[in-house]
Image (cartoon, rainbow, N blue to C red; front, side, top):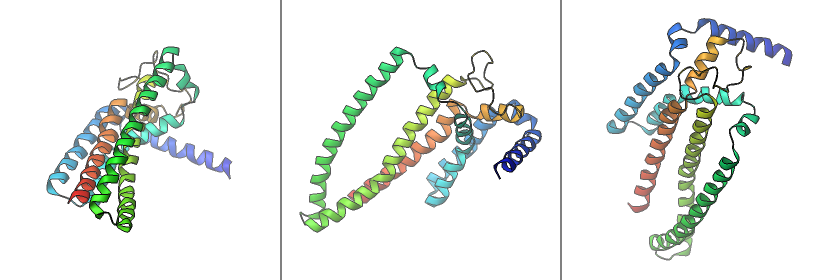
Length: 229
């Protein structure tokens, strides 16, 4: 079964490699920016025109597809050892230092927020215990999605940082400085050029990063309005 799947996958990749437009192979990043401009414009129009939330979110997701899917494909085929190759001793300790600071700030904010939310819930429920519990569960459910979005945004920024180390910032990475695995789509050079070109750190931040930030802002505004009005 597995032996039959491998040739079929190779045939699909070969077919895609042959049928890619020459303009896309030559300038994948330019097409990625054009995609971003089109769907970014639609996102802004949808915001001001008050389109349905489902349609607006769908546009956001489609706008981030090229850079995000190319990034996932590239990083899936990048060995774990490439991470260690870019980590100096100073970088190792500096990242841990920043992590400790961020962790302390997050803990402090969580303590302050917990006290503030406890007071707010009591005011909203007028000290009725059953109402306080219900409001707390409702608030927790409402906060889950924004928190996941915030963590996803940090994850995207981390991926963008690693992409900058892996392939650089050029549309077509330099052969001397690029650390993209040689085995990645080695049999499909045209498809490799497109995927590596689309997996650009700037394009990932602009499309997937800004889309996530826009959705996070929308959710935060919605939650705030539901809580206070």
